[in-house]
Image (cartoon, rainbow, N blue to C red; front, side, top):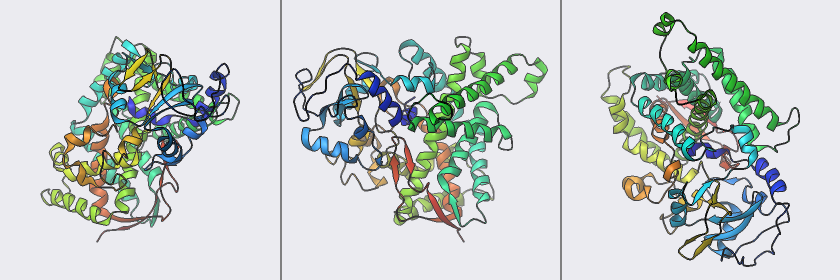
Length: 475
């Protein structure tokens, strides 16, 4: 699932670099590589340019590293990243070629430490037939869930509940709170864990520990963030495995009495082993929880800086609410009417760049246009660079949802959800719950962000101040 790509870790790639680069020879800065036919810089001995490549920067920019390299060498250049020779691509056509040839000319190539944290059967890491099998199960979850009445009710009721809890607040930690919202929606649909269940908070705590491991040095010592992340995943896996085993031994009477969820569907799939079942649950939870919360925070961030657009968005939701009865909840048809809201979310994805890049490796010697990619070289297609490319987007750094009026044209120039065999299947599901939350947010509150707030790629997106909002109820 592409959405899991946000967890690339500076710490992980740094240590992987030290291990993998030992046998390689560092080339001089600015020299031309005879094998790839491209210019570039190989950086320092051992670590190459890994630290510079993953250095945190504003996620609504391409960062200093790419600015300097593109200026010096062009949109496609050589580098040495994550312990090996690499091609970095800021070219839209080459990026699409890479994504569309997954499993043919390119394969997933994440550092070993990512495997240690995510597990052998994570969709991000799996390849070939295993990847296809796991993805098909996740797609079935998306298709079954997105228009289900109980999912829509869950997303809206949890939105109303969270917004109600802010009633007497003047300042809130928005990004932290909406992580609890998105996690609550997902654990409810997957595992039937209700908001009042203490297990929900334990799951959130483990997920937060899990994520800290992605931005830490992978040092396998007691107490390190890396070790804590591996332990957190083991606890999460044990919790899910325990639920699977418990349900397998339930009496038929108890099975019929309780509410059915997607875990029941996964359990009934005889083509999956226990580890695959657990990994699917964790992948869906992790992707749906973190990515949806980040997109929601980006929407609120950009709207706070664009009062005219916020006013237009509010008008759309007031029109939808005007046709509903007092207290009547939203439905699938209401979501389809939220055209401007969907444009706002798409533009927040383009400007905010939840996913900067993915890790690939060439499995063959490849020539594309004038570019030569040798077999065995790492390949990094940079989504951010395409999203902010002035040759593709007029005033690319301007937050302008109106550019999405022609969705077909824009979809060809953006890769927020990736492409090819690894395109993220959960994009629509995430947008649906975000749209319901936004509906009640804009009708209930006004907000301001701190003047120095900004989204930062770590490489996954966090906020400088955690999206602290000053809020007040609307009249």
